[in-house]
Each structure stands twice: as C-alpha cells, then as structure tokens.
Length: 126
Image 1 (cartoon, rainbow, N blue to C red):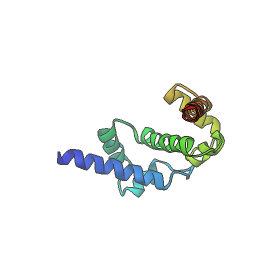
Image 2 (cartoon, rainbow, N blue to C red):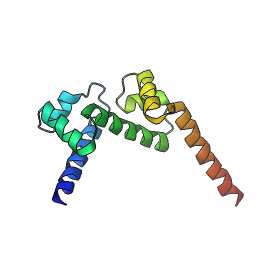
Image 3 (cartoon, rainbow, N blue to C red):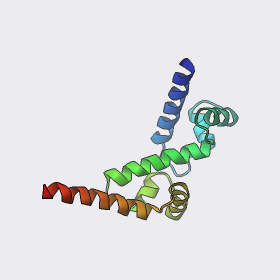
Image 4 (cartoon, helix red, strand yellow):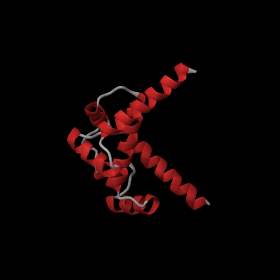
C-alpha cells in the first residue's frame, strides 16, 4: 500500500512539474530530471517502473492531456493548441496525435464539436 502511495505521489509530482513548463517547446529530459533533482538514468528507471512509459512518452502524454483539455474548454485553433501544449511544430503535433489516437486533431475536434452541438440541439427541443 505504501509503495502504491509513493508511486502515485511521484507520478503526481512529475505531472505537475511538466504542466508548469508545458509551454516550453524546448523542455526535454535533461530539464525534467533537473527539475526533479534526479539523474536522467534514475528518472528513466523510475518513470518506466511507475508508468511503463519512457520519460519522452510520459512528457508527450502530459502534453496531449493538456491539449485535450484545451480542445474541450477553448475555441483555440489546432495550431494554437499545438503551440500551447509545448509542440513547436503543428505538423509534428498532428502526426504524433494521429499515431497515438488513430485520428487527426481536426477529426477529434470536429467530432467533439458535433457531439456538443447535438446535445445542445436535444436540450433545446425538450
């Protein structure tokens, strides 16, 4: 039980650390390790052990989670969301997004907007 709490605390701390610097396009593994007062090799082992991901995959997942929040809570363009999520190239953001989720950000955004519009339409009809 204590081990699970320690893992959750580490993942939470690591997530908060990345979220604080999410808009830095140059945020990398060296900076992440320094922010957590760890060596890169120690960080890599700890992230892999607690999440099953590499640090790069972990950082990218945090960035995508932030992007999902922006899709849902704002009317920003895909380009603006990419930059706000720490990607310095919207095309790279799109490629990574499509590889990870099986659809482009544009497809995701349009399906999300249609669902919201549909719910609103039903709400007004009742």
